[in-house]
Amino acid sequence: MPKRQRPPVSDCDGPSVLSLFTGGGGLDLGFEMAGFRTLTCVDNDPESCKTLRHNRPQWEVFEGDIRDFRPKGKYDIVIGGPPCQGFSTAGKGNPDDPRNFLWREYFRVVAKVRPRAILLENVAGMLLKKNVHHLDRFLEKLGGLGYCPKAELLDAADFGVPQHRKRLIVVAGRGWTPALPDPATPIPLTVAQAISDLVDRVDVPNHQPNRHAPKVVRRWSRLKEGQSDPSYGRARLRSDRPSTTIRAGGGYGPRGDHLAGFHPPIHYALPRQLTVRESARVQSFPDSWVFCGSKTAQGRQVGNAVPPILAGAVAAKLRSCLEENSDTRRSVSAKKKTKRYLRSCASA
Image 1: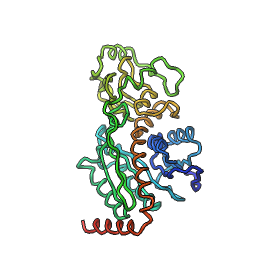
Image 2 (image 1 turned 45 degrees about the horizontal axis):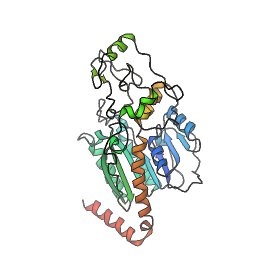
Image 3 (image 1 turned 90 degrees about the vertical axis):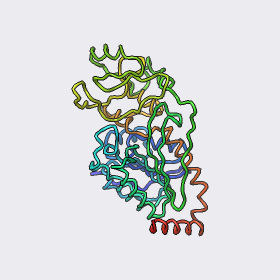
Protein backbone atom coordinates (compact mmCIF):
# COMPACT_ATOMS: atom_id res chain seq x y z
CA MET A 1 0.00 0.00 0.00
CA PRO A 2 1.30 3.47 -0.80
CA LYS A 3 2.29 5.63 2.13
CA ARG A 4 -0.04 8.42 3.18
CA GLN A 5 1.30 11.73 1.96
CA ARG A 6 1.85 14.71 4.25
CA PRO A 7 0.55 18.16 3.31
CA PRO A 8 3.39 19.86 1.38
CA VAL A 9 5.57 22.31 3.27
CA SER A 10 8.44 24.45 2.05
CA ASP A 11 10.24 27.59 3.16
CA CYS A 12 11.21 28.65 -0.37
CA ASP A 13 9.56 31.51 -2.22
CA GLY A 14 9.25 30.13 -5.76
CA PRO A 15 5.97 28.90 -7.26
CA SER A 16 5.04 25.49 -5.86
CA VAL A 17 4.94 22.37 -8.03
CA LEU A 18 3.00 19.12 -7.87
CA SER A 19 4.78 16.64 -10.13
CA LEU A 20 2.90 13.64 -11.57
CA PHE A 21 4.56 10.67 -13.31
CA THR A 22 7.86 12.18 -12.10
CA GLY A 23 10.16 9.33 -13.19
CA GLY A 24 13.83 10.28 -13.01
CA GLY A 25 13.09 13.94 -12.31
CA GLY A 26 14.02 15.68 -15.57
CA LEU A 27 11.01 18.00 -15.64
CA ASP A 28 11.47 18.90 -11.98
CA LEU A 29 15.15 19.70 -12.42
CA GLY A 30 14.26 22.07 -15.24
CA PHE A 31 11.58 23.77 -13.14
CA GLU A 32 14.06 24.01 -10.28
CA MET A 33 16.46 25.84 -12.62
CA ALA A 34 13.71 28.39 -13.27
CA GLY A 35 13.10 29.00 -9.57
CA PHE A 36 10.12 26.72 -8.98
CA ARG A 37 9.97 24.49 -5.90
CA THR A 38 8.79 20.92 -6.23
CA LEU A 39 6.79 19.94 -3.16
CA THR A 40 5.29 16.57 -4.08
CA CYS A 41 6.22 13.90 -6.64
CA VAL A 42 4.06 10.96 -7.69
CA ASP A 43 5.40 7.82 -9.36
CA ASN A 44 4.80 4.07 -9.14
CA ASP A 45 8.33 2.95 -10.07
CA PRO A 46 10.34 2.07 -6.92
CA GLU A 47 13.72 2.73 -8.57
CA SER A 48 12.65 6.17 -9.81
CA CYS A 49 11.41 6.99 -6.32
CA LYS A 50 14.78 5.95 -4.90
CA THR A 51 16.46 8.33 -7.33
CA LEU A 52 14.19 11.21 -6.30
CA ARG A 53 14.71 10.60 -2.57
CA HIS A 54 18.47 10.23 -3.00
CA ASN A 55 18.91 13.50 -4.90
CA ARG A 56 16.22 15.63 -3.24
CA PRO A 57 15.38 14.24 0.20
CA GLN A 58 13.27 17.32 0.92
CA TRP A 59 10.76 16.40 -1.80
CA GLU A 60 7.66 14.52 -0.69
CA VAL A 61 7.51 11.33 -2.81
CA PHE A 62 4.25 9.40 -3.14
CA GLU A 63 5.27 5.92 -4.29
CA GLY A 64 2.26 4.11 -5.69
CA ASP A 65 -0.50 4.04 -8.27
CA ILE A 66 -1.61 7.55 -9.21
CA ARG A 67 -5.20 6.34 -8.95
CA ASP A 68 -4.61 6.06 -5.20
CA PHE A 69 -3.16 9.56 -4.90
CA ARG A 70 -5.30 12.19 -3.18
CA PRO A 71 -3.65 15.61 -3.34
CA LYS A 72 -3.61 17.79 -0.24
CA GLY A 73 -2.70 21.44 0.03
CA LYS A 74 -2.33 24.09 -2.65
CA TYR A 75 0.04 24.18 -5.61
CA ASP A 76 0.76 26.88 -8.18
CA ILE A 77 1.36 24.43 -11.00
CA VAL A 78 0.86 20.77 -11.85
CA ILE A 79 3.40 19.21 -14.22
CA GLY A 80 3.92 15.74 -15.63
CA GLY A 81 4.25 13.40 -18.56
CA PRO A 82 1.77 10.50 -18.52
CA PRO A 83 3.20 7.20 -19.86
CA CYS A 84 3.71 7.40 -23.61
CA GLN A 85 4.52 3.84 -24.73
CA GLY A 86 1.16 3.44 -26.45
CA PHE A 87 1.63 6.70 -28.36
CA SER A 88 5.31 6.26 -29.21
CA THR A 89 6.42 5.85 -32.81
CA ALA A 90 9.48 3.91 -31.60
CA GLY A 91 7.53 0.81 -30.56
CA LYS A 92 4.30 -0.84 -31.63
CA GLY A 93 2.27 2.19 -30.61
CA ASN A 94 -0.80 0.25 -29.47
CA PRO A 95 -3.77 2.68 -29.42
CA ASP A 96 -5.53 0.39 -26.91
CA ASP A 97 -2.65 0.41 -24.41
CA PRO A 98 -4.34 1.13 -21.04
CA ARG A 99 -1.53 3.55 -20.19
CA ASN A 100 -2.82 5.81 -22.96
CA PHE A 101 -5.70 6.76 -20.69
CA LEU A 102 -3.67 7.84 -17.65
CA TRP A 103 -4.02 11.47 -18.77
CA ARG A 104 -7.45 11.16 -17.15
CA GLU A 105 -5.76 10.72 -13.76
CA TYR A 106 -3.62 13.76 -14.50
CA PHE A 107 -6.79 15.72 -15.20
CA ARG A 108 -8.48 14.37 -12.05
CA VAL A 109 -5.66 15.82 -9.96
CA VAL A 110 -5.79 19.13 -11.82
CA ALA A 111 -9.55 19.35 -11.25
CA LYS A 112 -8.99 18.76 -7.53
CA VAL A 113 -6.05 21.14 -7.06
CA ARG A 114 -7.09 23.89 -9.51
CA PRO A 115 -3.53 25.22 -9.93
CA ARG A 116 -2.74 28.53 -11.58
CA ALA A 117 -1.15 26.70 -14.52
CA ILE A 118 -0.39 23.20 -15.81
CA LEU A 119 2.20 21.57 -18.05
CA LEU A 120 1.73 18.21 -19.75
CA GLU A 121 4.51 16.55 -21.77
CA ASN A 122 4.25 13.62 -24.15
CA VAL A 123 5.75 12.13 -27.30
CA ALA A 124 5.08 13.52 -30.76
CA GLY A 125 3.08 10.36 -31.49
CA MET A 126 0.21 11.74 -29.43
CA LEU A 127 -0.49 13.98 -32.45
CA LEU A 128 -0.98 11.03 -34.79
CA LYS A 129 -4.46 10.50 -36.17
CA LYS A 130 -4.99 7.32 -34.14
CA ASN A 131 -4.00 9.07 -30.89
CA VAL A 132 -4.91 12.75 -31.21
CA HIS A 133 -8.42 12.21 -29.81
CA HIS A 134 -6.77 11.79 -26.40
CA LEU A 135 -5.20 15.23 -26.70
CA ASP A 136 -8.40 16.78 -28.01
CA ARG A 137 -10.39 15.38 -25.11
CA PHE A 138 -7.80 16.56 -22.57
CA LEU A 139 -7.84 20.12 -23.98
CA GLU A 140 -11.64 20.09 -24.02
CA LYS A 141 -11.80 19.10 -20.36
CA LEU A 142 -9.22 21.76 -19.45
CA GLY A 143 -11.37 24.36 -21.16
CA GLY A 144 -14.32 23.21 -19.09
CA LEU A 145 -12.38 24.21 -15.97
CA GLY A 146 -11.50 27.63 -17.35
CA TYR A 147 -7.96 26.84 -18.52
CA CYS A 148 -6.64 28.35 -21.77
CA PRO A 149 -4.23 25.87 -23.38
CA LYS A 150 -1.36 26.19 -25.83
CA ALA A 151 0.34 23.16 -27.41
CA GLU A 152 3.50 22.94 -29.52
CA LEU A 153 6.03 20.36 -30.67
CA LEU A 154 9.50 21.33 -29.43
CA ASP A 155 12.89 19.84 -30.36
CA ALA A 156 15.30 19.72 -27.42
CA ALA A 157 18.24 20.46 -29.75
CA ASP A 158 16.81 23.95 -30.33
CA PHE A 159 17.26 24.78 -26.65
CA GLY A 160 20.85 23.70 -25.96
CA VAL A 161 20.36 19.94 -25.50
CA PRO A 162 22.88 17.82 -27.51
CA GLN A 163 20.10 15.59 -28.82
CA HIS A 164 17.27 15.74 -31.32
CA ARG A 165 14.25 14.90 -29.20
CA LYS A 166 10.82 16.14 -30.24
CA ARG A 167 8.24 16.39 -27.50
CA LEU A 168 4.68 17.65 -27.34
CA ILE A 169 4.40 20.35 -24.69
CA VAL A 170 0.99 21.52 -23.48
CA VAL A 171 0.74 24.50 -21.14
CA ALA A 172 -2.42 26.14 -19.84
CA GLY A 173 -3.25 29.00 -17.49
CA ARG A 174 -6.40 29.36 -15.43
CA GLY A 175 -8.15 32.17 -17.29
CA TRP A 176 -5.09 33.15 -19.35
CA THR A 177 -2.99 31.63 -22.11
CA PRO A 178 0.72 30.96 -21.43
CA ALA A 179 3.45 31.25 -24.03
CA LEU A 180 6.12 28.72 -24.97
CA PRO A 181 9.76 29.66 -25.57
CA ASP A 182 11.23 30.32 -28.99
CA PRO A 183 14.25 28.25 -30.12
CA ALA A 184 17.35 29.59 -28.38
CA THR A 185 20.28 27.71 -29.94
CA PRO A 186 21.18 28.69 -33.53
CA ILE A 187 24.16 26.28 -33.51
CA PRO A 188 23.20 22.96 -31.83
CA LEU A 189 25.45 21.41 -29.21
CA THR A 190 27.20 18.28 -30.48
CA VAL A 191 27.65 14.85 -28.91
CA ALA A 192 31.43 15.34 -28.69
CA GLN A 193 30.99 18.63 -26.87
CA ALA A 194 28.72 16.90 -24.38
CA ILE A 195 30.58 13.67 -23.56
CA SER A 196 34.16 13.70 -24.90
CA ASP A 197 35.65 14.38 -21.45
CA LEU A 198 34.02 11.23 -20.03
CA VAL A 199 36.10 8.68 -21.99
CA ASP A 200 38.70 8.11 -19.26
CA ARG A 201 36.70 9.32 -16.26
CA VAL A 202 36.11 6.99 -13.34
CA ASP A 203 34.97 9.61 -10.84
CA VAL A 204 31.42 10.13 -12.07
CA PRO A 205 28.39 8.02 -11.10
CA ASN A 206 26.48 5.76 -13.50
CA HIS A 207 29.46 5.48 -15.85
CA GLN A 208 30.21 1.76 -16.12
CA PRO A 209 30.65 0.69 -19.77
CA ASN A 210 28.99 -2.49 -21.00
CA ARG A 211 31.15 -5.50 -21.83
CA HIS A 212 29.97 -6.48 -25.27
CA ALA A 213 30.66 -9.81 -26.92
CA PRO A 214 33.92 -9.87 -28.95
CA LYS A 215 32.05 -10.27 -32.23
CA VAL A 216 29.96 -7.20 -31.45
CA VAL A 217 33.09 -5.19 -30.60
CA ARG A 218 34.72 -6.26 -33.88
CA ARG A 219 31.65 -5.29 -35.90
CA TRP A 220 31.18 -1.95 -34.18
CA SER A 221 34.89 -1.14 -34.57
CA ARG A 222 34.38 -1.15 -38.35
CA LEU A 223 31.44 1.26 -38.27
CA LYS A 224 32.01 4.82 -39.39
CA GLU A 225 30.23 7.71 -37.70
CA GLY A 226 26.58 7.68 -38.71
CA GLN A 227 26.64 4.07 -39.95
CA SER A 228 24.17 1.53 -38.58
CA ASP A 229 24.66 -2.04 -37.47
CA PRO A 230 21.88 -3.88 -39.36
CA SER A 231 21.99 -6.76 -36.89
CA TYR A 232 20.99 -4.57 -33.96
CA GLY A 233 19.34 -1.59 -35.64
CA ARG A 234 21.58 0.87 -33.89
CA ALA A 235 23.89 3.49 -35.34
CA ARG A 236 27.21 4.97 -34.33
CA LEU A 237 26.63 8.57 -33.35
CA ARG A 238 28.08 11.49 -35.29
CA SER A 239 30.52 13.41 -33.11
CA ASP A 240 29.79 16.70 -34.87
CA ARG A 241 26.01 16.60 -34.52
CA PRO A 242 23.41 16.28 -31.78
CA SER A 243 22.59 12.73 -30.75
CA THR A 244 19.62 10.82 -32.01
CA THR A 245 16.86 10.33 -29.43
CA ILE A 246 17.85 8.41 -26.30
CA ARG A 247 15.15 5.82 -25.69
CA ALA A 248 14.20 3.90 -22.58
CA GLY A 249 13.25 0.53 -24.05
CA GLY A 250 15.32 -2.41 -25.16
CA GLY A 251 16.60 -2.85 -28.68
CA TYR A 252 16.34 -5.76 -31.09
CA GLY A 253 18.75 -8.61 -31.72
CA PRO A 254 19.99 -10.19 -34.98
CA ARG A 255 16.91 -12.44 -35.17
CA GLY A 256 14.53 -9.55 -34.59
CA ASP A 257 13.88 -10.63 -31.02
CA HIS A 258 13.36 -7.91 -28.42
CA LEU A 259 16.33 -7.30 -26.16
CA ALA A 260 15.70 -6.51 -22.51
CA GLY A 261 17.77 -3.82 -20.82
CA PHE A 262 18.99 -0.40 -21.87
CA HIS A 263 20.30 -0.04 -25.42
CA PRO A 264 21.36 3.53 -26.26
CA PRO A 265 23.26 4.50 -29.44
CA ILE A 266 26.84 3.44 -30.18
CA HIS A 267 29.62 5.78 -29.03
CA TYR A 268 31.06 7.87 -31.86
CA ALA A 269 34.68 6.82 -31.11
CA LEU A 270 34.48 3.58 -29.10
CA PRO A 271 33.08 0.12 -30.01
CA ARG A 272 30.46 0.16 -27.28
CA GLN A 273 27.10 1.71 -26.50
CA LEU A 274 26.86 4.86 -24.43
CA THR A 275 27.01 4.46 -20.68
CA VAL A 276 24.11 5.62 -18.52
CA ARG A 277 26.09 8.75 -17.59
CA GLU A 278 26.92 9.55 -21.21
CA SER A 279 23.25 9.12 -22.06
CA ALA A 280 22.34 11.37 -19.13
CA ARG A 281 24.77 14.02 -20.41
CA VAL A 282 23.10 13.80 -23.82
CA GLN A 283 19.81 14.34 -21.98
CA SER A 284 21.42 17.38 -20.22
CA PHE A 285 21.34 15.95 -16.69
CA PRO A 286 24.13 17.24 -14.43
CA ASP A 287 26.71 14.71 -13.23
CA SER A 288 25.61 15.41 -9.66
CA TRP A 289 22.22 13.80 -10.36
CA VAL A 290 22.63 10.11 -9.44
CA PHE A 291 20.36 7.43 -10.88
CA CYS A 292 19.50 4.54 -8.55
CA GLY A 293 18.67 0.91 -9.27
CA SER A 294 20.00 -1.60 -11.77
CA LYS A 295 21.65 -0.40 -14.95
CA THR A 296 18.43 -1.22 -16.82
CA ALA A 297 16.43 0.84 -14.32
CA GLN A 298 18.89 3.72 -14.56
CA GLY A 299 18.69 3.69 -18.34
CA ARG A 300 14.90 3.58 -18.27
CA GLN A 301 14.84 6.68 -16.07
CA VAL A 302 17.22 8.52 -18.39
CA GLY A 303 15.44 7.46 -21.57
CA ASN A 304 11.98 8.40 -20.30
CA ALA A 305 13.00 11.79 -18.96
CA VAL A 306 12.36 15.27 -20.29
CA PRO A 307 15.77 16.90 -20.81
CA PRO A 308 16.22 19.30 -17.86
CA ILE A 309 17.53 22.10 -20.08
CA LEU A 310 14.45 21.89 -22.32
CA ALA A 311 12.24 21.77 -19.23
CA GLY A 312 14.10 24.78 -17.84
CA ALA A 313 13.46 26.85 -20.95
CA VAL A 314 9.74 26.04 -20.83
CA ALA A 315 9.61 26.67 -17.08
CA ALA A 316 11.35 30.05 -17.34
CA LYS A 317 8.82 31.22 -19.93
CA LEU A 318 5.95 29.86 -17.86
CA ARG A 319 7.17 31.59 -14.70
CA SER A 320 7.35 34.87 -16.57
CA CYS A 321 3.74 34.35 -17.68
CA LEU A 322 2.70 33.49 -14.13
CA GLU A 323 4.20 36.73 -12.84
CA GLU A 324 2.55 38.77 -15.58
CA ASN A 325 -0.83 37.26 -14.69
CA SER A 326 -0.46 37.21 -10.90
CA ASP A 327 -2.63 40.30 -10.37
CA THR A 328 -4.94 39.74 -13.32
CA ARG A 329 -6.05 36.35 -12.08
CA ARG A 330 -7.65 37.96 -9.01
CA SER A 331 -9.34 40.78 -10.87
CA VAL A 332 -12.89 41.03 -12.19
CA SER A 333 -11.56 41.25 -15.73
CA ALA A 334 -9.90 37.84 -15.35
CA LYS A 335 -13.16 36.32 -14.15
CA LYS A 336 -14.96 37.74 -17.18
CA LYS A 337 -12.24 36.35 -19.46
CA THR A 338 -12.70 32.88 -17.98
CA LYS A 339 -16.49 33.07 -18.44
CA ARG A 340 -16.07 34.14 -22.08
CA TYR A 341 -13.67 31.25 -22.66
CA LEU A 342 -16.14 28.77 -21.15
CA ARG A 343 -18.95 30.09 -23.35
CA SER A 344 -16.76 29.78 -26.46
CA CYS A 345 -15.92 26.17 -25.57
CA ALA A 346 -19.58 25.37 -25.04
CA SER A 347 -20.57 26.82 -28.41
CA ALA A 348 -17.68 25.22 -30.35
